[in-house]
Image (tube, rainbow, N blue to C red):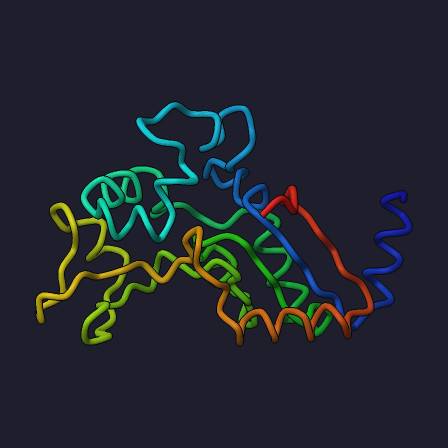
Length: 192
């Protein structure tokens, strides 16, 4: 397909859905997972897939949080041209929604309003005991495992391996894709 055909489809559509992954945020400076410098090509004591699993989170929360805070919390980054263009299309009534595998919140930072985060967000964190919410800075600045004022462990609202996707987010995503005039898929290997 040529860029001219894509441009024509975009110009003629009023119901575009964008489905993106880690490659969308690499221009902002955030590493992807499978690229040359990606998370899965770096060497750690355990494979990243194991570290960011529910089992590992429960068995070794200290190691999980050391890894998570250093490698999985992309804070301080800015939206790039892709994030901004998608927000512009949404504001113009062309884009129905963004469906993202990213947990960085850059689509919202660029101004997108309807964003379905399949894998959650580092910006939302909840106490596993009482449900109290905490922001990303609280997690990033905590020493070791972050705990709630009630004493419960705080878990990031990100989908770990062995966890199911949020059913409502998944349902909304499937509905949006099913009704789209144009579906743009970018920045993802579609492996996960």
